[in-house]
Amino acid sequence: MAARPPSGSDPAADPSQTSATGREQTRQRVIEAAIGLLEREGRDAVTTRAVAVAAGLQPPAIYRLFGDKEGLLDAVAEHGFATFLAAKHVDPDPQDPIEDLRAGWDLAVEFGLSNPALYTVMYSEPARAASAAYQAGAAILRGRIRRLAHGGWLRVSEDLAALIIHATARGAVLTWLSVPADRRDPALLTTLRESMVGAVTNQEPAVPDAGPAGAARALRAALPEQTTLSSGEQHLLGEWLDRLAAEG
Image (cartoon, rainbow, N blue to C red; front, side, top):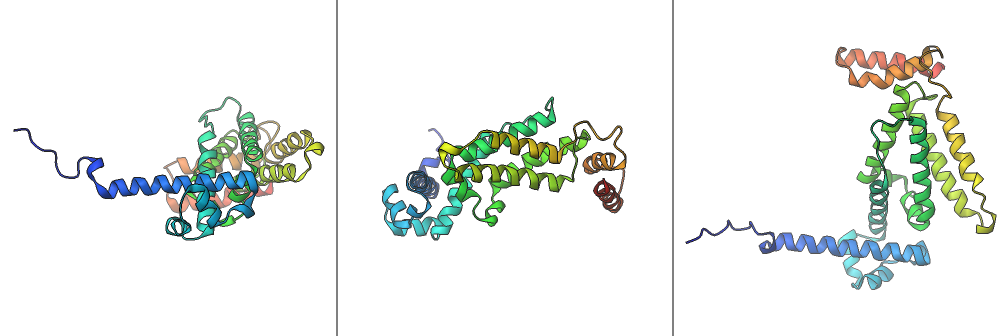
């Protein structure tokens, strides 16, 4: 007689797993319904009742799944960050790190222009920067910035570079969307991008000949990868390098 599989080994026979899968599918349907309303009618149209109708549910289901309207919008934003993250191309060793920076900036702006209502929800609340997908995207940007620092291309600190890149990309999207379609000039996007590049990078690598500031930034970028120094020594050296880099 053939042995029977252990109880619970068949996912289809596990009511709790089936219930969780159904809940996640319903949750995704609601998020997609909310995004559809955003795109067609704007943020004011995204009420719990309207979303429930669009998703084929009763309004109480929205509260059970998301808590309230803000919880729903948080889930919509997280979906947007995850979609944007999936579109990112990560080259661990780009031939030209500055061109890689440009390409990443262009991708961020293109996503915002292609998804204006969703983009506005994604960046309307600072707290949404804590989302897992947002943090994963930020890590990709930090990797780009770190490669610039390693090569001596970085003109400012890594933290300031990240802020400048974020600010110029968001500003480009929101400004473009605020201008009537017949007055939009593509030169705006190119100019903002090149202003960003000029603000955060050097025209030539700084390490060989630009004095201690560029060398300090390059060494600061490499510091976490070394194991010779103790944690206390790394911390102290990091403070010194930050001070030297700031004086440049």
